[in-house]
Image 1: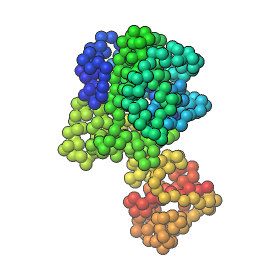
Image 2: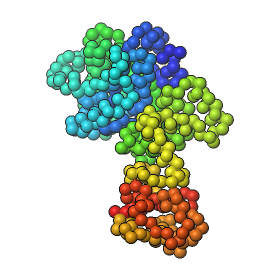
Image 3: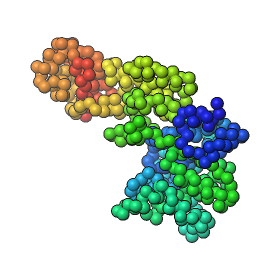
Image 4: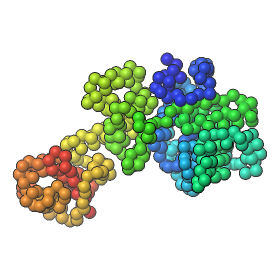
Length: 425
């Protein structure tokens, strides 16, 4: 199966500028393809994963990928899909964000693959050299305003009396279009890919290339990564699911996919993993015959966590999951425990209390796990008290610094699933 046929099977093709011939064109010889990434944060999120993995798929099929970080366009903000003006980022914040994205992209793309080696570029390097007059003269004169007004990203904002669209965001399309022209001239790039909300920007670049240099460029978009209810994948009540372990721990990342709905997991297996068609179809059948096994969710979580955080990240996430369901706890960090037990009640106590030993009864009574020392005593006597998931059956038991599960935290449990954290400071 050719690359484009595989992408279609995986539901990764929304629109192309040449449905009939694009597949054959891609098979003729290695092509240069690019996707752009907005540096509004120092980490990519799950929504950015789809275009990044598309570049990875193109590279594995023998093509050369270019990942463009929008150091210049990030100063303006893409109006596509936005109902209001974005806040402008300072140059220092943008520089830090660009550096963070560069580091992440190197985990997904091979930059040492010879002629097919990936390139990482920042459009500030070429757009930043323009004066305002030069840009209007060299680029702006090739852009018909009526074409810009016809773009969905602009039309949707023009009708809003209160917010509307500023000249700054209106000009965004020119900058991204010029990126395509520049990459074609400097790298021989002929294909731009992106989410379906980028169609207007992509076709603007194709039109600009034709007007400026009489070149034929191509475009392809993929569907946005959405849940079956139409909301964005990778969004939770507490915020986005990030690819940075500092923002979203491997455990939290793994848990997000483990908890994916049956209606969503099949599409995620197709668009986000590199599993074979046969395995994905077998997982589809498994969901139909025995949905309770959650085999699809487990494979999805394993594959994506390994891709984003490596084998060590998967091991840490699986271990954290086991801990939450009762495995003994030791040699973890405060941050790891905080991620595992993010929604668990916690309290602080003086570290000095541990020096000479502290009665477990007193400690349990100081947490929501026991309303009184009497209740704490009964919990221990009935075999329901645990320190770091190790059962304690001695009502006279003392805890010391040796019982800390991490630098400062002790994990207490009552019964099967009632937890509390105590931080000693």
